[in-house]
Image (cartoon, rainbow, N blue to C red; front, side):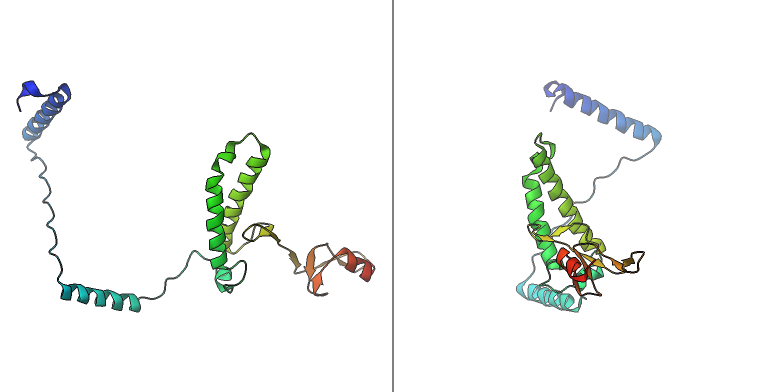
Length: 190
């Protein structure tokens, strides 16, 4: 192709290339060589393919089961039918991430209810991920529709000045074996 048929951009590129070659020659540096093209593999025969399949199957069987280092032991120990088990939590995360992506437009909405729905969804997904990673449940609700409420457990009760246990409604106390309610308060006369 002659220089007359080149576009201005092609002419500039050709001139730049000539100048680079001249500068490299002047400095005594050889220009880089193009890499060799990689040869294509020969196709495997049926016997070779069968042998490769057997070797891979043997290697997979010998491999140790995958360790889930990003899952807290407390979460791993839960049985599969538990509402907060790893399997259930992952399926809930998947559902809520889909919901989050579908309501992404509500993030900047002028309607406060829509913004609140987006924020609740986003925080619930974050809390589920924290539960898997750290074994700490941060949300007050749980379940695939957040339909269940967490209850508190009293591990070390506090006492009033007269020596009776200071109790809070909705908290499980191991000394009485149930959740403290208004009815129990009347029954115990506190």
